[in-house]
Length: 138
Image (cartoon, one colour):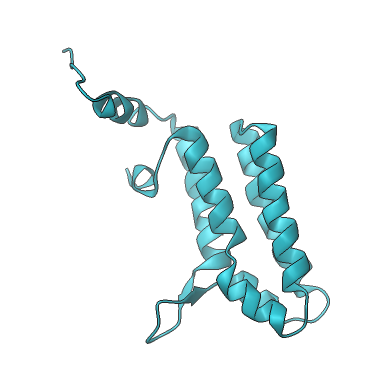
């Protein structure tokens, strides 16, 4: 069966449906970790959410570095998926910025609620593969 593509979108969708299961599993793992770290808990009555990154940041001294260690798992998964070095560097900058800014007492805790480095990194990976969040739900 042959499909004709008038706008190119159909071709993209056809390619998206052929994602290898191992790659899809890793992408879902990255999404799950990003959600856990950045948006797992919705604050009732608001449009804000926070995750383990914000909660770990409340532990003086080690919390932000523990959160960074988990964030580095996402970067490593992206590396294993073949994300190019320039995007890996952007991901590391996001993690580093989040760790340094998040370690500032009180202001860092507020910063962690707004700066979602893991969600940003997930988006970099999805953009690299030309995917969106819905593609991971298949």
